[in-house]
Image (cartoon, rainbow, N blue to C red; front, side):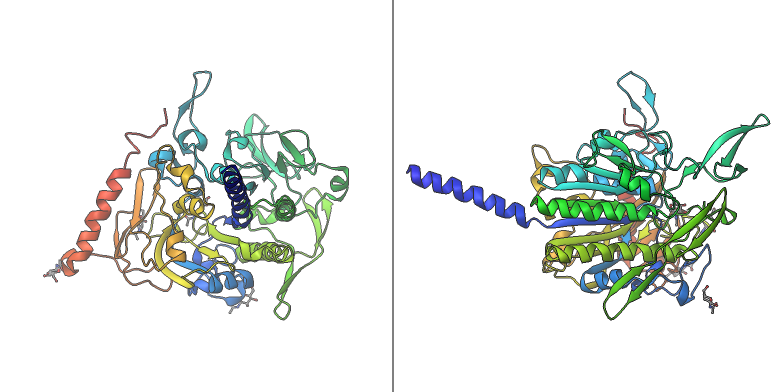
Length: 530
Ligand SMILES: *[C@@H]1O[C@H](CO)[C@@H](O)[C@H](O)[C@H]1NC(C)=O
Ligand SMILES: *[C@@H]1O[C@H](CO)[C@@H](O)[C@H](O)[C@H]1NC(C)=O
Ligand SMILES: *[C@@H]1O[C@H](CO)[C@@H](O)[C@H](O)[C@H]1NC(C)=O
Ligand SMILES: *[C@@H]1O[C@H](CO)[C@@H](O)[C@H](O)[C@H]1NC(C)=O
């Protein structure tokens, strides 16, 4: 009897460790401001490509051999939505909820809350409105967790998001500028009694928003980083790294090198990992090394792809000079497509490292973007220009039942319940009480014969609502569009001018979508947290 109990205990102990070891690793790459049309496999006839131009010039479209492979061997979605702008999108992804619960309505429009001192603050941290974030889920499921790139969390405490470690771009709300790159920033100053912004590097007045460099000679913060003793430290944090640091240091490399090291350490500890890489590539920035170009897509290190060996080579970069006058070697001309190509290069590095460690087959890579391409069209309320994003799932070792192009609706708000399923952490969002969420678990669609995932995708900017069903879409202009046949540019849908001319199912879906929007239409009545 005792022996039997003992055997049982031993067995259950063993199977638990085995389950732990085989939990899939997850790498979530979330890039900035990139519409599906910028990626070749979406096969759109036009894209932005370079700088604010509407182009169909193939040489201005990103070459993405890794993402192409992910889309072909994994699954990519043509009807994926986020919000039209980054803050609400990030909130949807991290919480599994829309703004009716997160209170993140727009960039610079968040719900208020009352702090410990009894004062009202006009920015509510997500962990207050939404206590189970994807990081918490992963930690409770036994994952080692890392957050790299843009935090975009203003004054919130970055330690409260469920991430063990972080490598962050500058969060101006949170720290004085990096002592290692004091000149690569734009700050407010007073000149002749007037408030003006200046490029600290040149001393010139400039009409571009205050910022700190996150591409060349970047400002970078570390959270709970190995080898450091404080919760937050500036990178470079060792003498050795400081000796190498300078004008030729490229921010995204610091993120990818930290991620590769994190993967190695997780593997050494036999722990599954969850990495959230919120890359800033795709976002415009002030071009400190070519200040005459202003705010644009600054150059990246030059890359070459060898199709035969399926490998990238990154050029050595040398940048010298000072005060706005720089000589450069090993960089390209910049442009949105160059940013996307650099993302592809980072993904290649991750895949190579995972293969080397023999864990690629137990890793899932998810790729998406937070909103559409900057300055594409006049405004982001038109049709789905703002919320339409790429969405790719690559899981080479899992038997996905769906492969290649998928026409089902999917939403970044689905990330939390989907990750809960993949991580075996569904109990965390079900017990002791069901965690309220708007996202739906996508994993059954990807891994079983299930044919449908969701009936609608929803997004907002403040009180402006947009929604897309399978047949019809209402945009932020309150115009209705037929979306039952996908159009090749994902944009030029036929407008609906006469509902009577359409079969009844179109009107039925419209009425249902209006009912759904009404439920979330609480901007005026429940804008704040408390
Ligand atoms: C396409 O873009 C490349 C790179 O900017 C340029 O050299 C080429 O002339 C362009 N082709 C056309 C047809 O505009
Ligand atoms: C996406 O959001 C950025 C700011 O994060 C904004 O500049 C850009 O215009 C947005 N794109 C669209 C298509 O709305
Ligand atoms: C949407 O509204 C804007 C501003 O009122 C207008 O300029 C634009 O033409 C409208 N777009 C469509 C597609 O109706
Ligand atoms: C709308 O469509 C119906 C049915 O086809 C037609 O009888 C009606 O004349 C149309 N109305 C307009 C304003 O075109």
